[in-house]
Amino acid sequence: MTRIHNYVMGLMSKEDMYAMEREALEDPFLQDAIDGYRLQNGVDAQQLSLLQQRLARKLETKAADKHKRYFSWQRLTIGMAAAVLFLVACSLVFFKYLNQQKTVRTTEVILMEQDMRVQMETLAKADAEPTSGWGAFVETLNSEIRDVSTAGDVQVTFDVVDGRAKNISVLKTSDQELATRISSFIQQQVEWKGKQGGLSIHIQ
Image 1 (tube, one colour):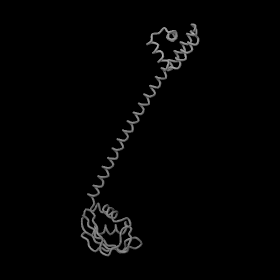
Image 2 (spheres, one colour):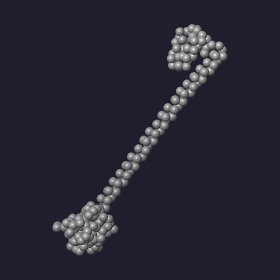
Image 3 (cartoon, rainbow, N blue to C red):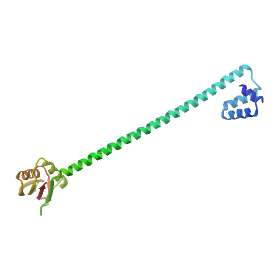
Image 4 (tube, rainbow, N blue to C red):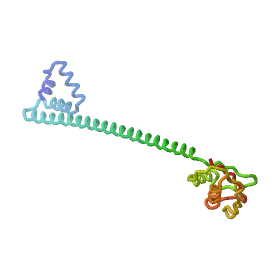
């Protein structure tokens, strides 16, 4: 309040008065205090003390608000940075998992290709084919004879009755056990469409 008194009474230097006016532009409460002091042409000691207390409380409140806003923004910035780091870490883990899965699937395909022992052709005039397709037929037959160490050739013909192979006839075989396993597979495990079947199967 002494500064306000000196400002109103013209007791300040030009530099101090200019600084006081800039503060008043930024602080409406200070401007109100200056205007009130001018209107009353000075205040007594008790009024001066009350104004000083009010001004001090106002300045303390402003400082506390500024401090609070600063730390609020600081906490928000830290939280956002932590969230970004968390998302980056999750992305790295996810892409690592995808690469591992891709490697596993590639390995499985390579192993399947290496273990594939069955090669097959249909005989002339045969129109029968598996309802699941030839690809599934070859893969399933390959699994069926996986424990058979014998290699060889088998030719069979059969009729299709109600979706099942009937009247199976082995035209040619280099191994009777292999022919028996293949005939049983064709009859019991495969559903067919068409009328007449004829297959030439080579086991590596």
